Image 1 (cartoon, rainbow, N blue to C red):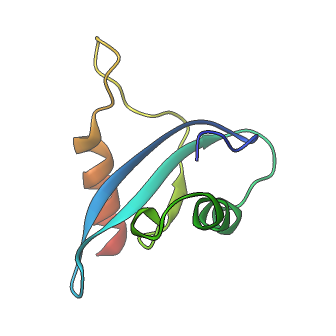
Image 2 (spheres, rainbow, N blue to C red):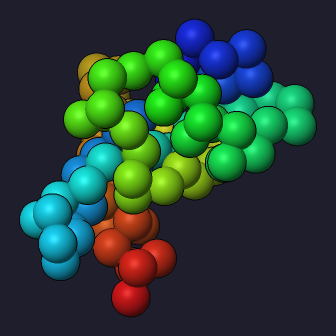
Length: 85
């Protein structure tokens, strides 16, 4: 997904799903006019089937990171769960 020309940063987390148990959802920082559907289609074309974004794609202003630069997936997971409720 990061190889997409309109995506600056990205992170993928697993979110709960009743049928599959957990599905991947992407959070991305974009520039330009890319839509979430275009990102999902791009990943579907360029990644193996288990990596498809069946949980969707959402755009954020920034990917939360710790002081050492690691992605804080806990914040993204909370955001993804709240969105599904």
